[in-house]
Length: 179
Image (tube, rainbow, N blue to C red; front, side, top):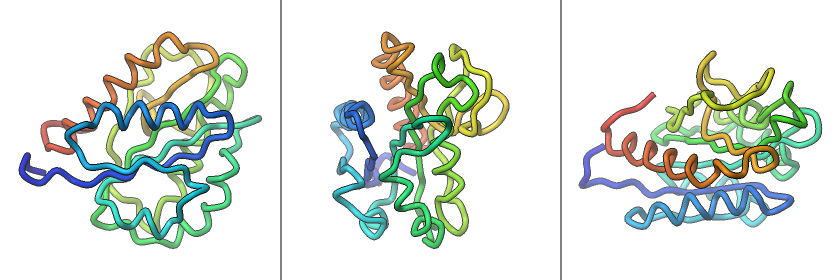
C-alpha cells in the first residue's frame, strides 16, 4: 500500500476488566495520522467490521484457555464472513505465570474463526522475551499471531511492546515490511 492510500482501521475489542480496552486505546493513540475507530464489540457487530480495510481485534484469554465471552458470542458469525480485501491484526492479553499452558489461547481461537477464508494477517509478533509452556496463539514456532500483552506478570513491558507493535503495523500497512 502506498503512502497516498492510508487505510481505515477498525480496532475492536472485548474486555471484562478493562485491560484489553486500555490496550486498544493505547494502540489508537499511537495512530494519530490514520483514520480509525476503536469500539467495544459489545457495542458493535460483525457487520460493522466490514466497513474497514484493516481490522485490529483485541482479545483476552480467560480461565484455562477460553476466549473472552463477548468474542465467544460472535465466533459463529465471524466464520461465515468474507474478509477478502481486508487485513487483520490481532492483539491478545494473557497471564503467562498463572496459565503457562494456555497462554493467550484466545488469539488462536479468534484467528481460527476469522472468515471463510482467512485474510492476510499483519502484526505477527516474536515470542522472544515471553516465558510460557504452550499457546494456541502461535503463528509458527517463533511467533505469536499478534501482539501479546501480559498485564498480570509483565506490565512493565506493556508500553514498549505496544509502541513497537504499532510501528510494525504502520510499516506493514505502508508496504515497508511484513512477516
